[in-house]
Image (cartoon, rainbow, N blue to C red; front, top):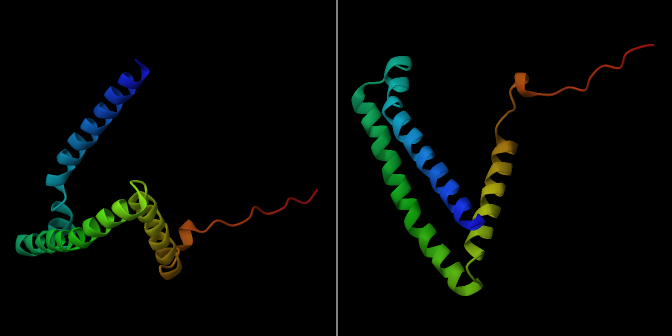
Length: 112
């Protein structure tokens, strides 16, 4: 019975996440058009470029995941994806500068 409740809760969380994403999606073009002054054509070009790059990237990724699944078992694509994600985050951390507001300094010792 506990497993059934977990599945229902997970399904509700997924549903609410999908609903909130679909609520925010129509608001996304407001930032480039109002804040950056981009035209609707530029926004459409950006969204089309995004969809194209995702489509191009998913084909080799799914082929690689299928090969990993067949060669090493069902958990291999997840381990490989997690490792690549951590490596990408580490590479971005090395390349991108840390803003001054995000740097943490050691607290000053109080004299007694």
